[in-house]
Image 1 (cartoon, rainbow, N blue to C red):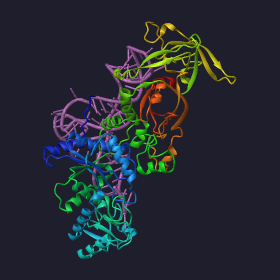
Image 2 (cartoon, rainbow, N blue to C red):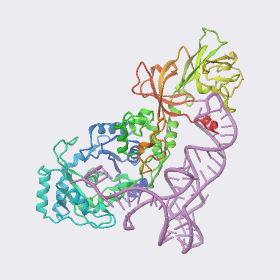
Image 3 (tube, protein in one colour):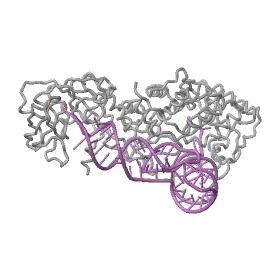
Image 4 (cartoon, rainbow, N blue to C red):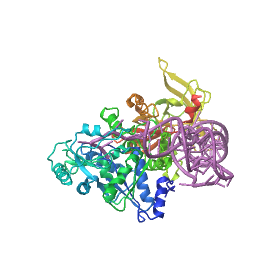
Length: 558
RNA sequence: UCUCGGGUCGUCUAAUGGCAGGACAGCGGCCUUUGGAGCCGUUAGUGGAGGUUCGAAUCCUCCCCUGAGAACCA
């Protein structure tokens, strides 16, 4: 079993520690992850999932999965299913506690009736425009609705009629009677029910009135016995409202809302609306395009759940807005893949090499380790013969002064095989290099006793045995750190035109023919790659998950 | 402009009146049959001005910067 470092503490855990000490919630810790099923989950949700489920795990508590489905016009079962899959894939489990806010529609309705009876809510028959007009502004107080003082009986009657479908969409709303002059505009008699004659993905046409978030959320939390209702910072201003409903209904054992800063990652966007735009307008191939910051995109790209959980622990939880550098995510990924991904040799851009002093028909079996970080992953055999392919980048006709690889008259080691020397550069009539003629030193077979040392070691594949494959090389989707930073500019202006490069004639070790979708490998010296789900027996397709760190690129730049 | 938040190395995050620490990135070195990994070392920060205190990132005052809030969205 691998060592597991504990999740670092944070201000939310401090609050829970204090609540436990003062016995605020009778020693209970119960959280929830409440996505709206109107889009796919992304890495920002992963932060929240790790936070909520992680707290439940560490405090011996529970975490519910709850779909916040109070707006039938935007929500779909497709999203429900993807969300379930993604949370599970991340490694979390809700047992039998998968709920929907729509499960509580009847209770929520009954609570609303109680508010009306207590004179704390009323039916407003203003139009949306009138509502807006009466709301006032940030600096000026609002005006009370002419319907504000309807009798309890009239309100009850109207609310029932609303529920029974007697009115058209938008003609009436139920509003909480709070304070039209509050500096917090959310408290200026917020709408808590609206008429929407729309089919709901779960309740069908049973309801034609639907509760608003601010009303449904605290009550759903209360119904489920949530103790700590953790959400992102933009809901901070909603907290007085959250508390108001619990107070107005005189509910005991109230949950407590705590806000933290959502994740922003450099070179990407996290807005569901914008991600949807990328999908719908075809900038990416779908929600699971490997360039998307969605969980399904990251999964297809080759990210591991472990790496995402470690990332979540590493970035911590706080209240200040932050833009986390994506290299931190990539670090967590490489850290995990380095330990677990088997090594293999693959040549992305092949350059033929003929070893002129090697016997024509000879084939040798070379021994290679599958993972130097973990010898329990075993060894494999590599065929070596007279004709091989190396990476075009591993040869320079006029070498940079710090270039340690192959160049005319120079020696380099072929990993797990021999040291070779470049004797001749063969070109076509246009001057393109077509092949290299090299000689090998038979004394330098890998594992042998030769003391000969060379500066560079390169990867290769044997021409006869290698098989063809396609590689998809991904780069960041945007060219700037914060594509949404400039309100004057559309984020799509910053899409990286080179975010995907497809290479169709890579050569890989024959063993890889067995690879299955999702299998992950390190292509030695190149990076981590995984088999794409669209890969077929005929054509293996590899997604480049992430490159290896490249200190040569830095030297070359200087 | 009003209300509520938030400002600590380049980035993320600790320090809860008592040595400003960690991670990533960077830089330098060691090691290496992956220019990978690993190991060692190192650079770098409390938005500003006052005040309280033996002592302030932390408490107080003012200023500056920044985020959120005027959907029948969540």
